Length: 212
Image 1 (tube, rainbow, N blue to C red):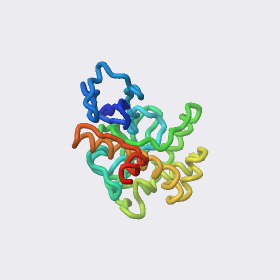
Image 2 (tube, rainbow, N blue to C red):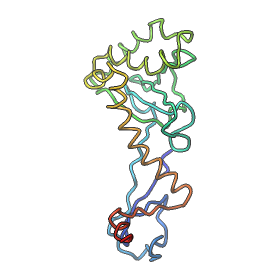
Image 3 (tube, helix red, strand yellow):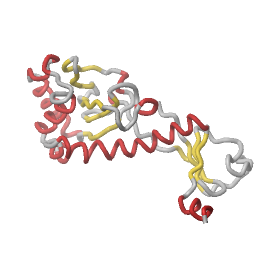
Image 4 (cartoon, rainbow, N blue to C red):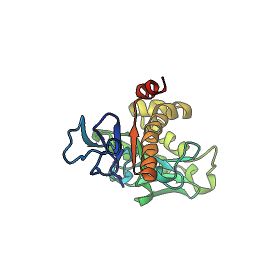
């Protein structure tokens, strides 16, 4: 699902595009014969497929995906994976375990190291046995996917992930906001390229000099 955003620098500003053009969008020079001040490279894709990341905490938009549908005001849905990559989530349908493609574009909030995998699975199994995760107990505001994941992390007692899980606000500030903020830059860039074909990033200093 990686759209493959490319960045290069030829005649001054950095240029972003989906594929390297024959001519520079800024100066129109032939790029097949040009010297680059910054060689073309692929911009790191911030999203992951949940099933490929064992013992992880992952997050995605409640509806749609990050690249095409997400905006800051939208709700996010959080879940965890087992050591085999099975996704475990709690929503209005109750507790579910699956390998759905709906979790194909997620942000990875945290992942346990290999020695912790057995403990991770055992703790998750014990939490899932609690009757409070039945569909009838779901509440969008008070008893939701966030409640499930934080309850699990608190019981897990795994470093900073579990420490932050003692507070909804703290966990959000330390693990969710930094990831969504970083991903937001990629999303914004992707949408500009989707609309315009390329994006020229001009340093603020150059803009100010022109204004003078």
